[in-house]
Image (cartoon, rainbow, N blue to C red):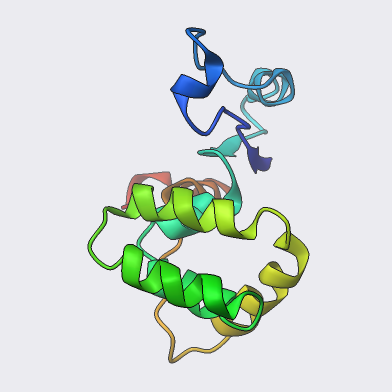
Length: 136
C-alpha cells in the first residue's frame, strides 16, 4: 500500500505537540506483514517528488498553472535545499493539485526530462518485484 503519512508540514504548527502519523497512516502501518508492504510518503506525493531532487521539473509543471508564482519560486528557490523547496512548491499547488498533477504527469512521461523517483516509491516497487536487496 502506498499513501501519504499526513504528518504536519512543520512541527511548530503543532503548538508544542508531538509530530505523529495521522490515524489513517498509523492504521495502514498496522496492516504491514509478510504479504503487505506499506510505503508512506513523507507528507505528500508532491512534496516527496520535489524533495527527491525534482525541483526544476516541479516548477516547470507549475508554469502553465500559476506562471507568476512559478517565476517567483524559480528565483527564490534557486539555491535552497530540496526539502525547503518542497515546502514552498507544496504551498503553491495546494489549491490546484488536480490541474498541477496533470501538467506534472505530462512532463514525467517525456523520456528526455530527468526524473528522480522518491525513495519510498523505489522501495515499494522493489518490494513488489522482490528485489529488496537491490534498492539504492
